[in-house]
Amino acid sequence: MSSFAGNAIITKAKSLYGDRLYPEDYEELLRYNTVSEIVGYLKRNNKYANTLSDVEEKSIHRGQLENLIKKSYFDNLTRMVKFISTTDRKFYELDMIRREIDIVLSAIRSVISGNIESSIRDLPLFFKQHSSFDIEELTKSTTLNDVMNTLKNTRYYDLIAPYFTENPSEIRYTDIEHNIYEKYHEIALERINKYYKGKLRNQLMDIYQSKVEIENIIKIYRLKKFYNANETEIMNTLMTKKIRMSNDKLRELISLKNPEDILEALSKSEYKQFKDTEDYVYIEYQAGKIKYNLARRYMYFSKYPPIVYSVFLFLNEIEQTNIINIIEGIRYDIEKEDIKKMLIY
Image (tube, rainbow, N blue to C red; front, side, top):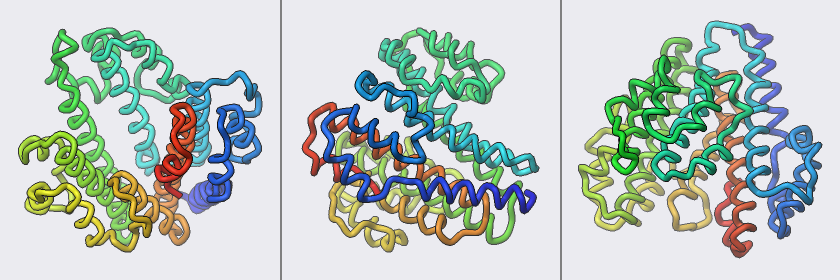
């Protein structure tokens, strides 16, 4: 990548990160009781001003706001990617693939549930010009066969085909999801190895491998705590190929009789310095906080455009999730202190 393009990405990412929501912003948002109040506040933030400028605060509903927040996220991504015209552009397109995966899995869930209307509302149609398949056509799918017909000539077709069934109740969603994410992990590592070397490659590998490890730990915890799954069932859901954590170590975590011991193991692992000081007991918070603190460290200190880009996307996604959690909290009348415990910042 040229130094100009690299500097442009770093400058843009750090500028957008500078416009993030700060602790005092979250404190203010937590004071509100309506979606319109949240919209009014976000419209005054540089990061969301353009996306929300034409929105009528009193008429917008929760689903529309969530979709606009997602659009803002995607707009930030495309603003940075436009600077890239060099051979490593394929690395920067990894997040586009992840957006596609979200859409594909959403369509399959809608087929299983029969709730097609919800699927159409939630899919980010603003993404359609960048997708490798016809998103609007996918939203019309009522069967898995419809989904697969739309996905012909894409990487997703062959990943779903082994699980094809005409009966929605027999769709093995977990297996399909695992197969698709395993392929994404493989693509990510291939592109890192192809386009980078030395310290930059090692740090990118650290970012991606850490993410996979932490997500594996979350799955182990949840499957043991809420589903009483056995070792074989849990191992079948985990990412086990091309990761740092050995299968023996994964089985060691699975063998812990008390799921809460997994939290304890996490607090004593290599990630302990990134663990939050607050003793919140649910693992998604602690795991998210670890990834957040890792990403923030790289954002402040890295001089490599691919790394700054990668961690910016994650930090931006965390903020998006925070806002949606606040909106959902208001919708379901959750106590403000309980909403706050879900936020990572």
